[in-house]
Image (tube, rainbow, N blue to C red; front, top):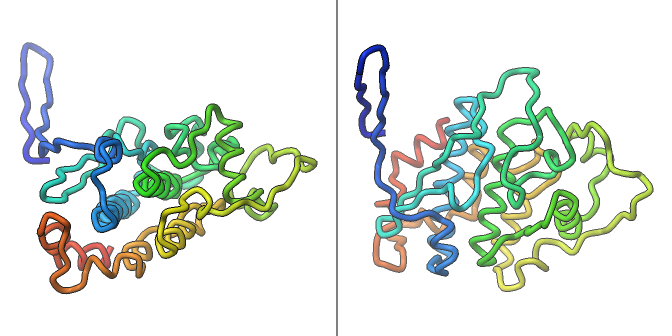
Length: 253
């Protein structure tokens, strides 16, 4: 936020907030096929850095998706927008599972869990990265059942331990056919192995096992961004997008 001000008329007060202008979203950049691997890593790091900050504040966003990720592409800056579904996490609280846009909704919400936290945003962010790589939606389910089917087809059927960790109120039919899963590489045939491996550490059934927090920001997947003199395709130094103070602050959270 740049600044805030109030206008008072009679007994009413209008609070106004002025934010940075962000001309694009990740959604528009994906649609226009303007992202190379360096920019994908750059924006993914910033997205997870923002989620780590929200986690420190005990806030879950609950609607992470490309059109809610605001971008100023020439300087390579990213901000998380649209907090209309956000909620402060309280110990022992329950929340409606009908949150998060379907394509980015984690399996615990698809299965009806009412006990969840900011780890739902990690799953959504993984789907956003998958979409950047693939060029279109990673799991384009037609409805809740189809969404679960697509996830199961890629990851395989959840185990009893997975279901317990997701705090699912009504486990799926135990007699339903179990599948081994094709793996994420089948969804992303043109992706480099290191990209698929990184994504496989995020898109997990068990919420607490998903790579997030400081760990995701320190992952070797991002090492190439922080090599001395690393640049984007437009010639801009990565250090102008993610400064040393940004890195130090992220690691100290």
